[in-house]
Image (tube, rainbow, N blue to C red; front, side, top):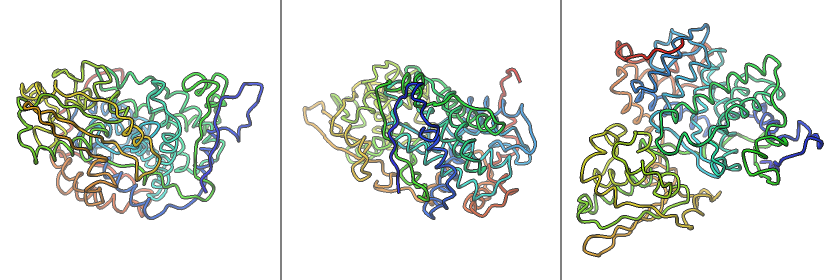
Length: 505
C-alpha cells in the first residue's frame, strides 16, 4: 500500500531521526526486493529501445562527440560500453554513463513525465546500465534497478516542484539514479541513504540551462547527474557519508532551495511489497521536441491536412495558443525570451519555442528531428512571417488539467484560435499527444522498434539494428556477461570520421 510522508524543515536541535528522513524512505523503497510486474518489464524494455534510438540519431552531433571523446580517455576493465563504440572496448562506468547520457538527451527525444516538476525518467537508464555492465549483473537485475530509478524520480516529480524555485529538474535525477544503482547492486539501506544524500547535494543547480540562449549544457545536465550518482554510490560503498538531513535540514534543500523553512511537502512512495509501477505513468515522444510541444505538433499536422490555406501566412492575422502555465511561461511567449522568435537561435532554443514549432508543423504537416531545426528551415521568410504572428496565453483550465493527478484528466495540450485575414476564426484543441497512452495512436512495442529502426538507419548497419532489437527484447533473460551486448555499434569508420576535440584528458 502506498505510503505518504510529510516532509518539512527541522531545526538542528530537533535531531530528526535518520529513519524519518525522506532520503531514508527512498532508500527503503530501493532495498525492497519486490518482483517486477510483467507490464513494468515490458515498459522498461520499451524505454531501453527508445533510449538507443535517440542515442543512435545523435551519435555524430557535436556535444555527443565531445562527451564521447572524454569517455574514451578513461578506458577501464571490466568497465562499461559507450554507445557507438565496439562492445569489446570498455570504459570507466561513470564516464561511460556520461557519454551515453549526453547521447540520449541531446535531441530531447526520449520519455517524459510532467507533474509538479518536469522529468525525463529515461535519464536513469544510462547510469544504471553502465554500473550493471561494470559489475556484471544480470538483465533482470538491470530491469529492477531501472524500475526503481523511474519510481523515485516520478514520485519526487509528483510531489516537489523544483522549477518554481528555478532549480533544474535533474535535482530529482541524482537521488533516483543513486537509488536505482542501489537496487541493482542489492546494497543495504544505510549505503543507499548516504548515496542519495550526496547525489542530491551535488546536483542542485539553477534552471538557467533552460532559459534564454539554451546551450549544449541542456544535454549534459542529466549526464552530470548520472556521473555524480555513480560517484556518490562509490563513496557511500567505501563508508563515506552525506550531509544529513539533506532535504529537511535547517540549512537543507527545502529551507534554502525550495519553499522555505515553513513549507511542507507530501511525498507518496510505494509501501513494503508494493510493485514499482511509476514507469507506467510516463510517456515517450513521437517528435523531437519539448514534451509540451508534442500535442501541438499533432494538432498542427491535423490542421495542415484539413485547412491547406493555413500554410500561407498572408491568410492569417494572428494565432493564439491557450495552454498551461508551463507551456506559456517556459516554451511560449510568456517566457519573454526574444530568442524564441529569433531565426538564428540555437537548436536547443528552437526546441523550447512553441511559436516556432507550431509554425513549422503547420506549414509542413510533419516534424523531422533534423530538418525541422535546420538554419535554412528556421530562416524561411514565410515561416518567419507566420512565426511572428503566434503568441501564447495561459488558460486556467489547461493549467488545472496539467497539474491533475487523475490520469484521465491530466493533459498537456490546449486550444488554438487562428484569426484569418478575412476576419473569420478557426478554433481547435487537443488534450494529449497522439503517442500518449490516452492519445489517438498510443505507442506500443512495434512503435518503439519502428522509431529505433528509423533513427538508426543512417548510423548502424541493418544487421546491427536487428541484433540490438533481439537482445533488448530478451533483456530479462540476459546473463551477467551478456549485458555488454546491450549497446549499439556504429557502422565501420563512422565514428572515426568525427572531429574529436582536445581537452585535458
